[in-house]
Each structure stands twice: as C-alpha cells, then as structure tokens.
Length: 123
Image 1 (tube, rainbow, N blue to C red):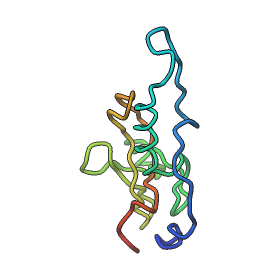
Image 2 (image 1 turned 180 degrees about the vertical axis):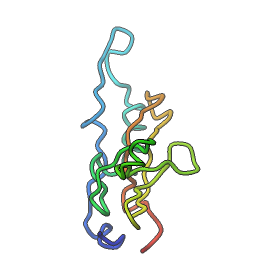
Image 3 (image 1 turned 90 degrees about the vertical axis):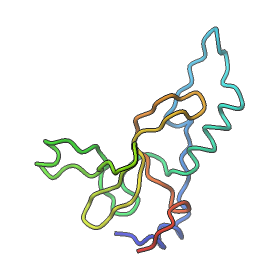
C-alpha cells in the first residue's frame, strides 16, 4: 500500500472528463457551451481517472449486502451524500460516487477517487 506522500510525489494525472463523458449534440445544443466545458474541467480536476484504488490497488465497487458478505465491497458510502472511501484494510482513500450539478450534468454515478493534491490528511 502506498503512503499519501508517495501518491503526492507520483504526480498522478487528473481526471479528464473527455475520456468517459460523451457529449452528443442535438438541434437545441449543437455544441457544448464553453462555460459548461470550463465547469467540467474545474470540477473533475479534483479527481484521478476512474479505475482501481490509487493507494492500495483494490478494484472499486459499491457496497451491497451480497458484496459485503462475500468480502468484495471495496467502496463504502460515508456520511456526506455521494462521498465515500476505499474500505480495503487500512486504506480509506476518499472518493465520490455521485456527482450532482456539474455544468450540464444533473447526476452522474461514477466512483472517482480524490487526487492526492486535494487530500489534506497524512498517513
């Protein structure tokens, strides 16, 4: 398991929303307005690209009863709506699984871990 300092020193990329959000133009909005693109850029730069946990390598996934019983759940929601963390023994790397009101997005369900540059606690 990596330390928080090692993660900060790794200079991990920030999340690029172009890689997982597909904008489909229509007659009402033939292009994505710049203010929406800027809002998406600003919001998603706080996260790393989707994937396995950056600290422990565990595959992220929502916690359900069956997953809990089988020991497969590696993401657990916290007290704040949409927020959570990796629950692999001792990892606790923070993430957000529900994203609301970001530019043109009203609701997006996707587990994204916070970028080490925005996490303020240490090991």
